[in-house]
Image (cartoon, rainbow, N blue to C red; front, side):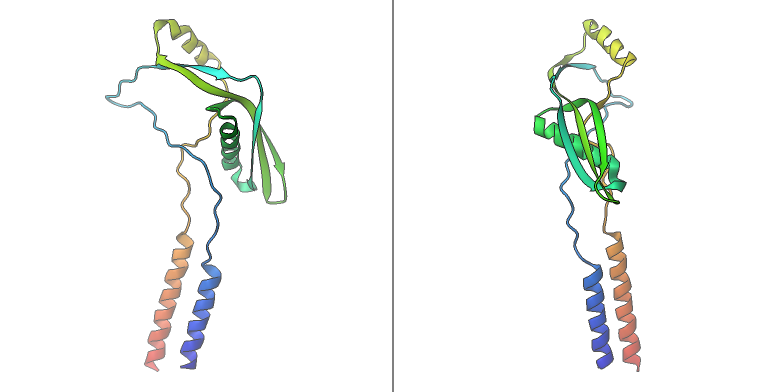
Length: 174
């Protein structure tokens, strides 16, 4: 009886220590789909880009291993705060806060899309000019799915349950 109570207490303590909940930071993202493929006819769409002449900035802090994600979060912050659709010519500044954390700051010109319309032959010179000199633009989304977490917790739970069953079976045989 003492052995079962001790085993049960050890399992409860182990489970409590190693199966805690983590608070995840809030993130902004958007989904998009490219329009191309067999049987898809896409008419080119033109839009005017209204670029403001004052720079805005955004900031994100996090682990140094998440630099790409922090860049996206900084752009999302700048875009959201300025009410823009995107940043033109973004400049990223990365500063370490500690040995494992960094602050990513982005500055750029906020811009909004205006006057969406079907492309015409008059727009062809603008399309060709855009293909010759691409402008660096940062938008607040990524094309990859976020990584899912929680697999380790399930594995630990399975190991604990197998251990409990083994202990009960071996304890009942004595």
